[in-house]
Length: 282
Ligand code: SF4
Image (cartoon, rainbow, N blue to C red; front, side, top):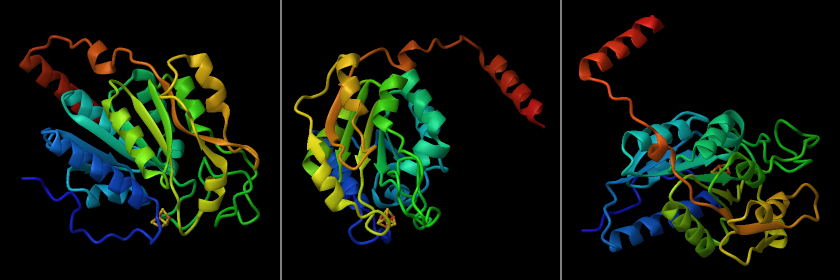
């Protein structure tokens, strides 16, 4: 029997919010997975804090609603404790590119075998419109009424430099493409990063802006770092810039759990070590 994938929880996202597109894309992928005879019991969704995070309440799968900026370490812990699980980590731009930035970089560097989907609406929506690390230059929000005076962080370039093995960018108004990117990210063995340009209907309704700036990359992603670099550099540092959608880079290499060498340790020794750790914290 197939399960109902949307829970009965009251949905409080604003009408027109791009989070709906990500939720329904994930729902469709999970339905496909069930149809292929794979269990959904071995899928875990981890979210951070922000509007995006409510997806953990709205999708009926195993989930962990974590802390602001800390979704990636939780997802890392789950994966290392049980490498057989498929771990999907939904995070926001304020969540992963500000407070949780170090976790994102280290998960990429370590090649943790999880899929990180960034709901990048380029604004703090839940707290009603402050700028985030990816807000465009000049963004006028609640904390920057005269406009921001700094360039946006380029997450794709950052992930390329950090060693991520699968790097892609999607857009919530191109759902078929987004589905393909997330499917490929989940199938990728190793750290997969998908930045999703997500419309925030209330505080950054950039639909026309994106529709006139985005274009689709022709290939399924280069395995060559140097070829991926110029594409990753394209970002809206100025109003004429083009924004590429698609897969920028793919490279398969041993994952952290494959490289990790377990230290042989007996039960008593392990319990003593844990006790010592706990005592040291008192
Ligand atoms: Fe979506 Fe923006 Fe509303 Fe949050 S504030 S639910 S991101 S439209």
